[in-house]
Picture 1 (cartoon, helix red, strand yellow):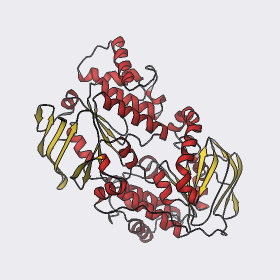
Picture 2 (cartoon, rainbow, N blue to C red; picture 1 turned 180 degrees about the horizontal axis):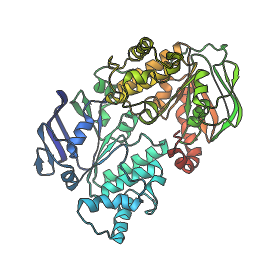
Picture 3 (cartoon, one colour; picture 1 turned 90 degrees about the horizontal axis):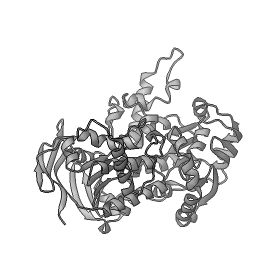
Amino acid sequence: MNAQLSATNICKTFGGVQALRSVNLSIRKGEVHCLVGENGSGKSTLVNILSGGLVPDSGSIQVGNSEFSSVTARQAISLGIAVIHQDLSLFGTMNVRDNICLPGLVHRKRWIINYRRCDEIASRALERIHADIDLDARVESLSMAAKQQVAIARALALEAHIIFMDEPTTALTSVEVQSLLDTIQKLKASGVSIIFISHKLDEVFSVADRITVFRSGEVVGTYQSDDLDNRRLSALMTGHDVVFGDPEDHVVPEAQPVLEMKNVSAARVRNVNLTVRPGEIVGLSGLLGSGRTETALTLFGLNKLEKGHVFINGKRVSINNPREAIEEGIALVPEDRQEQGLFLDRTLLQNSVASVLKPLSNSLGLINARKEHEIGKEVLTGLKVNTQDLSMLAQSLSGGNQQKVLLGKWVATKPKLLILDSPTVGVDVGSKSQIYDIIRRLAGQGIAILVISDEEEELLAVCNRIAIFVQGTVTTELTGDQLQSGYSQLYRNADKKSDSHARGSRLVNEKGSNS
């Protein structure tokens, strides 16, 4: 089968660091080709080169019968190449029609807008992926899944036949993920080539025809999807076996619970009863809007408790803000490390101690520099951050190392209860395995842990027990043998029950409370 797009011996260096070494890649017509590798392995650099964002140091690019030493962004669009970035790059205050059509008008230098023609172009593009979206709706009012469809329709309106999708499922529910994967299959059937980039290996295997593995700036190889499994693919990506393992049981059954929630109701949470004992890791599972994150926000004082009681180590507590939560021994690692978790333009030292400034300071507000440095070193060493330079800016780290620093920042508070919201989102498989080890180690120290996650593999790898949320309350708890045998079926059932509820609540979630 002839290649629609080929990269031959592509090399790229940044400041003496070899980002790509003689990379070769070919994309066939009408295939789904997945690019996988750890953060910093070179995937994004290659995508930027092929789409006109970067100029390679050497090598060549072939599109159809034409060969180039490099392409500009405008050339890439003319050649039928489009990139749908993780942030989608849509104009939230503009309507669907304009988001789909205006980029094409600008590219073709057509400065007079024919709105009737725009309606036809936008409608046809949405019809190709079976998307039913109001052309007059403002994009900011749409669900994340609908925004994805608008971004795909925009690429189709640009007459793209080669579409790169960079981590497209990060903010989607399981129902929405399946809808996107179905859309990808429709595009494939129409002859469009999809290059799918993801850290979620289950999604890779569900959609890929071929998989190209990157490691340290080189292509390890390109494989038929059927020739690989999770373990072999993980080993190819990291250079060693990656074992996620089974959760260790550090729970003492007769121990007093660290956390007890009795009939707790709050924003989109109703009559939740939940206990977590020292050393126990409890997973919170459910769809977007099911109440998982709202429960965590209530415990951390960000949502007001409306009814019920919360007990920490047997003592009833009233938590009205995060400061009071921290004083009671509760720490929350948020889902969005860049927006809610880290100060990206500050040093690793400043980030590591950001949650413990009060105990580090004297009566005049002056920070004890020695203790500050000790905590910073403890975070980097104890959590195996891939640097010991406390003066580095957080934004310079990979996603996995940023996540470890964020985790360390809250572990520094010495919590009794640690809440982790999507602890490995956007993290490569090697860092994911390390973070799981850290979570187990913290549980071994007697910390009670709540893990909120959409990933079955993640919950089964670390949790002793899983509580499934449906429409604001815990409907089922799984323990022991039930975890492996019953989780998938129960989650699918919860999926069906909650789908309409999730759809009705997406707008609320996107404006501030992602669950």
